[in-house]
Each structure stands twice: as C-alpha cells, then as structure tokens.
Length: 429
Image 1 (cartoon, rainbow, N blue to C red):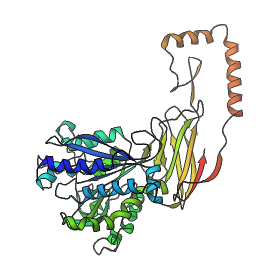
Image 2 (image 1 turned 30 degrees about the horizontal axis):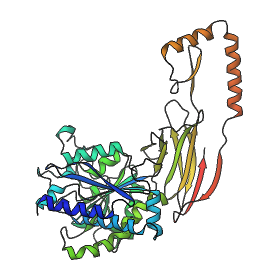
Image 3 (image 1 turned 30 degrees about the vertical axis):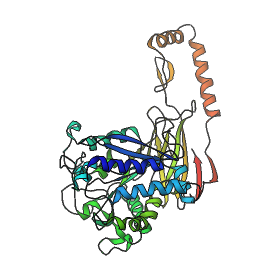
Image 4 (image 1 turned 60 degrees about the vertical axis):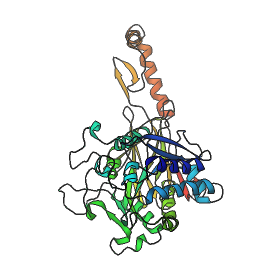
C-alpha cells in the first residue's frame, strides 16, 4: 500500500469528524514528507485555556498500527457523544485532548518497526543515562517534530500506544547501571496510580499473569535508552505512559472493534483522571493580581511543575494519599506553602505571592516588576536622595503599614466540580 492511499484514508477519517469539536493540524513531516496529523478535541480547539492538556500518540513503531486505529475510534466516539455521555462531556469541556494517530507513517507504509531511515523512533530521544542524540539536528524529523510540539504546548500527561504485549509501562525506562531492575522516578507513586487506572479499566490487562496488576516499571521489564517516555517527564514536564494494548502487533482488521471495546474505558478514564484527581490552580501576584509563571514543588518529591506563562495555571498529578505539602515559588517573590488532604476528588489550590522588596540606591522596588528605563530610574534616585529624603522615609512607613493592613488571609471554600469530577476543594493561600 503506497503513501497516497494511506494518507487519503487518514484524511477521510479526520475530515469525517472535523469541524465539530476538533481540528487537525500537522506538527511536522516524516522522512518521506508526509504530514504528522494531530487532532485536537476540545470545546475551544486552538485556544489557550487553564485546562490541562493530554496527548495520545499512536504508531510510534510502524509495525504496530492498532494504536492509530483506536485513536480514530476515540475521536469519533467523543465527538458523537459529547452531549450524550457524561464522561465524554467531562473530557471535551475540561481537557484539551490531542491525538497523533501515526508518528511513523513511513514505517507503517513499509510495515517495519523503524522509520524510512530504519531508525527506531523510541530510541531517538535524549537520555539521562546514555549521552546519545544530544545533537538535535542529527535526530529524525519525526523526533524533532515531537520535541518542537512540546515546546509549543504544555502537556500535563500523555500516553503512547504500542503492540506486542498487554501492560501499562511507566518510568524510568532505563537504569543508572544499565541492569534490569526496578528503577523508579521521583513520581513513582503517581505513575503507578496512572498505570493502574488504565490497567484496571481495561477488559483484562489487570489480570495479567506476567505483570502484577497489569503494570510494570520500564527498567524492571527491560531497560531501554533514548525513549520518549522518560524524555517527556524530564524535559517537558509531561507524565507519559507507554501502553502495550495488543498482544498481536498487526491483527486482522475485523478484530479492531473488539480491541476498541477492550481499551475504550481505559483510554477515557486515563484522560479524565487529569481533572478527577490531583492538585490544580493558579499563581498570582499580590501586588497587581497578574498571573505568575511560577513553580510548584511537593515536599518529599524531587520534581518541579511549571505554571503557564499566560494564566499562571498549573496541574500537578499526585496519587491519592492523606496529605501533601505544596510549595509555590517565583523569582522575585516570597514562596508560600500549605498542606492539602488529597483523598477523593481533585483540589483547586491558588497561590497569591507577595513580592520581595529590595532597597537599592534607596529605591523601593520589586526586582522583577520594574520596567522603567535607566534614565527615569536615575532621575528618581536623585529625587529621593535630594531635598525629599524625609518624604521618602514617610512613604516607607506608610507602605509598610498598608502592607500589614492589607496582607491577604488564607481563605478556604468548598465547591462542586462539573459533571462526574467528584468533590473539588478550593483553597487560596
């Protein structure tokens, strides 16, 4: 089967659902020049919002086509059931979902694992344990397309769909000494939780005799290096799973409806878990109320989640547990921390950070907020150190008093989330 027929069929699938709740864009091209089509499903496709983003990627290996077909099934089902099924409504209205049915169209056409250059794309990413692929220009065009895509969009979580086994695989994929052993990442609990959501929602994955509960640590199964999963977590802030969804890599087409039925609830529940669990919120400046692109750290977990530049929003995946201490930081601002209880349902946690104030040349200023030019700044300093020095100290006293008077107090309120997201607690500190 040649490329034109493959992509004509793919475009027909995309056009059949396009214009309702999604649109399709190309994030790059394969070695042979064929588009890497991405379908975005959302109530506001193409717009930046405070909602978490999730991506599914299929057909990373050309000879594993089940994932590409199931993603078309998923896109059609969500668009058809948006206003009919509560889970579809929850996903469409609360998550930005991106679907890349085929990362490797050339390999699919050739019915081989690698791309047109015979490179395994799941060994082509930078790796923390093996210093390979450090030159971005030397990577495959499909790999570069994924990396550029994640520079443009801040994904909270992700999964790639593979074939040849039946298990949910989580980081790390490799180990420090290259041995086959359990080697967990800082968010091991969260990844086990995510993997279990998929496994236990599946028709029979959780009953695996080979993998306890139908999940496995990558390095404990077999170590690999240059994988996309670990790169996502380290470099893109994205929690990615590798999902083996079919024992048969290339099943008969008649089996696809059954494979869709076996994986349907797993695929849906994994996406929905972004808003049904975890900690979500925004970071603001107490000075002018503007959003801050700060950082979120959870005590005891050596990992940082970045807030968005536009809205200061963050989405932190955590396994349900009694309590977590959450810390918000931002250069030029005083950090704040609070303890939350994460049992059933998500928690919305907003932070209002107070600027750090420095006195430099007797100018009271926020070291990150000052946007004045050098000449104006010099004139202002001269003004303060001139005949108006007494007025300056009075202003300091008044500002200090106002800061104490208007210091924000912690507020806690309870609300109910949309649809089936469960009880959502809202906290502002």
